[in-house]
Length: 116
Image (cartoon, rainbow, N blue to C red):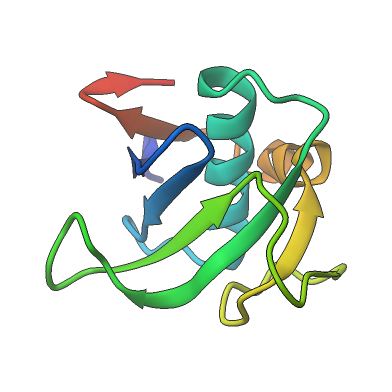
């Protein structure tokens, strides 16, 4: 069993950030990482998270896949109960995204070399 799952997160601006797939992460882990980042780094506990850019090529780590999340409303936003990351506009509350971490307690995010 793996000791930790480390997911890199790269801030883009004050509300937008890239979550890079790592350690076999899927949608649930990426939403969890986005929830951790919003809560622990952006200090936005009561916001919504939106997929600005669905799963695609990473800007920060060429050759990897990532998702761009934002806390700012986006066009065509819609709430979903699924954790997929292949559709722009999908929205979860920060609390819902963070709650997904309960099933993956060893997940950590890495931001600027710091682990959260």
